[in-house]
Length: 198
Image (tube, rainbow, N blue to C red; front, side, top):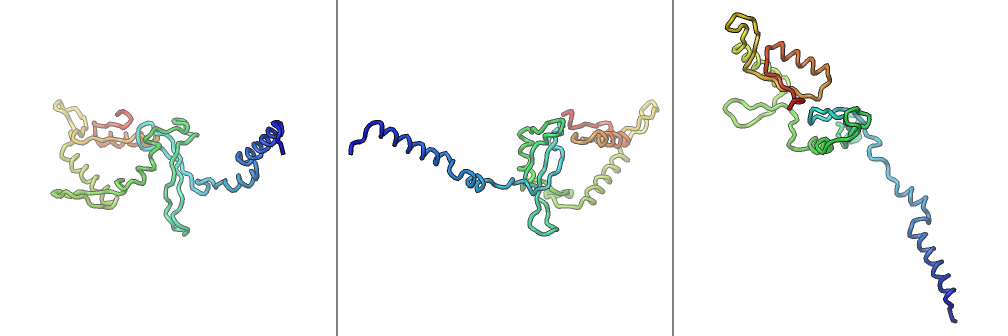
C-alpha cells in the first residue's frame, strides 16, 4: 500500500497533537492538580508578631511556631521567620541577617540562660535569673557607693557616677527607651550609649 505525502502529514500531525496533549498534562489535568496540591506548611502554625533583634532598625517579623508532639503541654517550636508586610519600617523585607534569624535561633551556640564565672575560674556555670539580677544589682550598688561623686571641687552638686557605663538596645518602644533613660540617669551614670547610635 502506497502512502501519499498528504496522508503521511495528516497522520504525523494527529500523532504529534495527541502526544502533545498528554505531554503537556491536559489529560486528567484536574486529578493531577488535586494530587499535586500540598497543604500550606504554616497553615496550623501560630503566628506571632515581633521585632528583629539585630540592629536599631527594628524591622517587623512574623514568627511561626508549632507544638512539638500532640499533647497539650507540648513546648512550641519556631519553624519559620519572615518579614511582616504590615510593618511600617520594613514592609515585609528583611536584610540577610534578619532573614537568617531561624538559623541563630536554633543554633547550638546560642546562649539561652544566664551564665556566671566565679572569680579565679575559667569556666562558666548556669545560674538562675534571680541570682543573675541580684548579682548585677549588688555589684552596681557596691561600685556606686564607692565611686559616686555628689559634689565637684567647687561644692556644686553634680551627682555623678563615672565608673560604670550603660549600653542599651534599640529595638524597644519609645516608652521602654524613655524608662531606660530615666533609670540610668537617676543612678547618676553619665556614660549612656545606645545601639541606635553605633
